[in-house]
Amino acid sequence: MKQLKSVAGLGPFLIVAGYIYYSVVSIWNLWVQVVLYTGIALTLVMLAFNLGRIKASFRRRATQYGTNTVVMTVIVVGILGMMNFVGKRHHKRVDLTSAQLYSLSDQTRKIVKDLKSEVKIYHFAKESNPAIHDLLTEYKSINDSKINFKVIDPQKDPGLAKQYSVRSFGETVVASGDKHEKVETSQEEAVTNAILKVTREKNKVIYFTQGHNEADINNQEGKGYAMAKKGIENQNYEAKGVNLATSPSIPSDCSGLVIAGPKVALLPTETALIDKYVDAGGKLLLLQDPDTDAGLDELLKKWKIGVDNDIVVDSSGLGQLFGMGPAAPLVATYESHAITKELSNSMTFFPLARSVKTVENTNSQFNSSVLFKTSESSWGEKNLKGGSAEYNEGVDVKGPVALGIASTKTVLADDKEKKYGKEARIVVIGDSDFANNAYIRMQRNGDLFLNTVSWLAEDEDLISIRPKSPESRTVQMTEGRSMLLKWLTLVFLPGGVLVTGIVVWVRRR
Image (cartoon, rainbow, N blue to C red; front, side, top):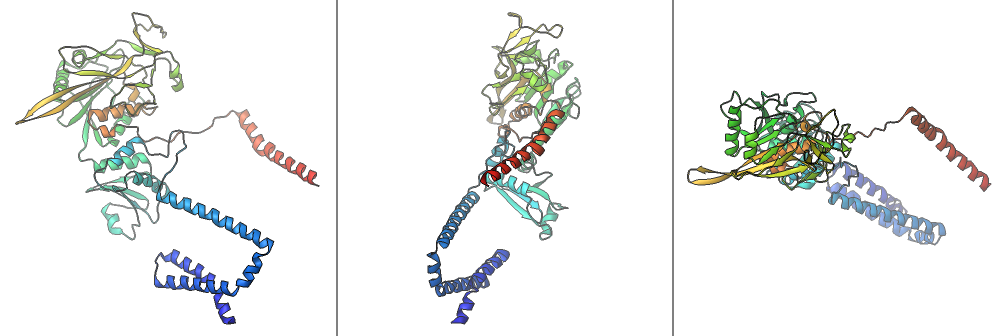
């Protein structure tokens, strides 16, 4: 009997040993079962031998208090365990940052939700990177059936690593079908762009006109459009330049033609090419700054669009928020249109803009509509003198004024015995600076520009709010305030706690 009591005491140790062994090998084999079940049996025998002592101990007050503590601890652990189980089964995070930096953007959600083919994402490492694991868990929660994420040890699976030309630990590859793309950083924008590149069948081309002092898509300086080009390429388009003066026609692969702030009027031969291109169902974006003539007045009338010879002034003072004056009108009112539907409750602003408008033309089949307007505190100033401006009734354009117009026309074309419809699309905005390198990242300027390009290219699924960039949260303090903060944290707060402790100790004595 004594030997059985001694052996029974090994029960709890066998249970712990069995659990540890199972957690290491992760296999529910015979040895694990034998150790665990033997431990449970011996533990029950041990409890049976000591039943009298257990009953006696429960009669003691200290034991009762201890039992209550144990029971409460078990209940709390059980609740936490249940919460963890539910949280694992039903993944949900709450992003409390002001810019929602840790939530997937509307564009990513739309793209991932509408995936038609499976996307495999491989992270080549010995163990998962927490940053990219959390990010891709969010992707998978949107479309679990189409997003497949795996961590691959390249040393254990060298064949897969070789297939995707993986050369070092930490590389991430996005693949779909016979296409694959490496992700350089564990940021949402990079992952979403890679998904676009491997799931889109064909790259569309956006052409920018050249030869009239337009914004240069290769210029990295403030006035350049290099960042706009990068944004276009991130959406799996190609961005190219074209000189219509030396071209017999607009390229056949043109999905959208952009004329970004021409300082010199286009030649009649160029306007004829544009007219023919649009009439055949082409897409055009014209960004025309104040005090410039693009040479497109006749075509604008045909498209039921007018451009006023003015500079839009905003007296609300909101431009000062961006370090600018009244000649940088802010837009927070957007009309119902595919381009602007995702921009509600957001702002865009336009440094040195001119007003645009819809015009009547009974001989035209185009239909034009306003995209967005400035505030009621703005107007179109037609006589700016000495840097000062005031609204003159009957002369200036009363606000709110339109800064963006869209125009469309359905084009029917014969293809043997079948007829199909194409839609000619034109967008005119009275400013080109809002999309240059200096301003495209401010507020929603970049979203407006890229949404316009996506609409022209008939890729409405890409029209959305794009991934956010981390905000700078630095605090600027004067030397005096910095010294005050040091005194508060190093002297006054610790000293206050010390004095309070001494007072309490003296009173208790």
